[in-house]
Amino acid sequence: MKILIILQTIFIKMKKNRREFLKKFAFSLQGYLFLKIFKFKKVHSKVKPRVIIVGGGIGGASCLKYLREFSDFINITIVEKKQEIQTCPYSNLVLVGQKKISDITFKLSWSDNPDINYIQSTVNKINFEKRNVYLEGKEKIDYDYLILSPGVSFKNDFLLDNSENHKCFVPHNWDGNKNLIEFKKKLQDLSNNSVILISAPDYPYRCPPAPYERASLIAHYLQTQKKKTKIFILDSKDTFTKKELFMKEWKTHYGDKIEWISKSNGGKVQEIDLSSQTIKTQTGLTFRGDLIHLIPDQCASLIFKKNDLIKEDWCKVNPLNFELEGHSNIFVLGDSIDAWDMPKSAFSANSQAKVLVTNLISRIFQKELVNPVFLNTCYSFSAPKRAFSISSWYRLNSGQDRIVSVGSGQSDVNASSELRMDESVQADAWYKSLTNELYS
Image (cartoon, rainbow, N blue to C red; front, top):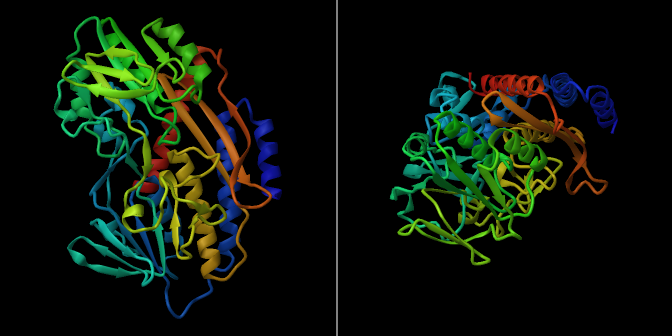
């Protein structure tokens, strides 16, 4: 509770300077958590516990970063099938030519580190009773503690298997295997007076403001190309995060080029007919598009149901240490979990990783678990040099069985262009700092 009071005080004092607040929060949180466990780093164990991390995205890489502080006392293995990671943050800026793909792509060099056993493979099976995982090629690895951060999978039966080959259809680019070049080319090929249809999924899903940021940046890009276009956002919800901010930015900079249609007003997609390039919604409305971009509803990675670890869409965890419900030595973080009030974001995953590692190390050394606090800050761009954000902090409720929001602050709806520019600089600094920390 002491750390929460400190952070609330900092936030009140720093409300007008988000950058200063984030620095102070990060220092307070990380310093507080790791001070708790650095005190007993010199304690040696006769047998090193074996920790396996599955997934090299933000959540998995963050766990790896913090666990490496204890590599003298634990054996660390990370399993990631890719040789390089493409981040979801900043991918929308790549889509419209403001960033290069190389700016969001990071080669995994963990094999160069003697403290890490990096295996480039896929986990095919988890035997939680015997505590081992089977990789491609049937290689078996034993673990004492298993950390899973595999991300999301996708739903929606109306997404046809061959849809991505159709001239009007673009891939969702929501899974870290982004075909951004194809998406960008189809944008470039649009003729004047084209209509773009974007479906926004129902909650919960990865990066809640991203569909609206994407629509904003597409509108900006086409505006710079002197093309008259109309963008319809067909939504499965009746509201969305940062709605007032986005609406103000759209009205100010794009006029009526972006139209948001809520679920109540007929926005939820029912079916798609690519031959006629039309979408029908649940209320019977029909929209024809020259470019159709469907962002699917989502669920936890299929690895969980495949291995009988969960029965529902999302992983239920103990918020104190992110232990998977019903499995005492398996931990899950990031986009795969039901994190209650915390959204699915890179910032959230990094914040959760600090807590997971702190309390895992505390458990290994038989120390008292830390009562955690969390932070999420999410930046969104309405144009390449215009950004705004929302910051929220969280703690456990009195029953310590869920994560609850205890305060938030967001950018002023009527902020000046200078402030929007400043927040874009802050966003760049955050992204560079995070990716350097995890992948440099």
